[in-house]
Image 1 (cartoon, rainbow, N blue to C red):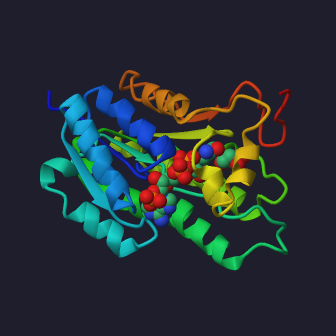
Image 2: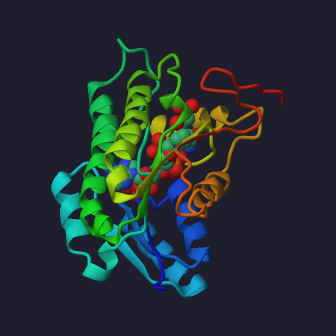
Length: 254
Ligand code: NDP
Ligand code: 8X3
């Protein structure tokens, strides 16, 4: 059997980087993506040297329909036969009341978290469908299950990821493609540094007083969903640290 291929978007940091390491350590060849070319090249070198796997690094912005289709379209045919696609690239920008929030932040979140996921998936499917199998894993959020104050458009984009995952699952049944939506709660990555636009003190406070998820925790669960027999699919999975029940309830005791 040939070596399976996993494609992971947003591999330059956080979940995407940890998921890439997890799949590499399980002998997948990888397609890793992100905008920061230097980080991507470093990860590519590290993974191919450490695990002896083959890695393609694609530098593009998922918000650009053309860039996404060009990058995936120029892959050699053998690399287009992707077994697992992890749609992970995404972000929150700002945490503001609806009436105070920035329209530019809203556009960026919608274009990245929703339209980017749609473009990448649509570009990958022509290589996945002919295999008569495949697995698409969409990274949602607890914010896609319950909305919270000042979460407005970020929560909306993750609700949309939840909805589009359900739609994809139905529409791809005839191609025998699994679709898994994974919804993590608070996890200590660069997510809050991005959300608070470089205010690292504010970002750090998000994870104080409890033990949040790590990127490695999320990567372990993502990988697990790909280890089940062909006839078994985890459709929807919410994953939080033990201190968190959902978007609203997070117990801080230290
Ligand atoms: P990070 O900020 O650490 O990583 C985000 C990744 O997304 C980076 O690799 C970044 O790469 C990539 N990315 C962002 N915008 C774009 C873009 N326009 N084009 C291409 N790549 C992009 O955050 P996390 O790892 O925490 O977040 C990963 C996913 O998990 C996101 O979808 C997030 O919403 C979700 N999530 C995060 C949670 C958390 O608490 N951390 C909880 C639940 C869900 P680059 O900048 O190089 O382009
Ligand atoms: C990230 C988790 O709680 O900041 O999706 O929305 S939260």
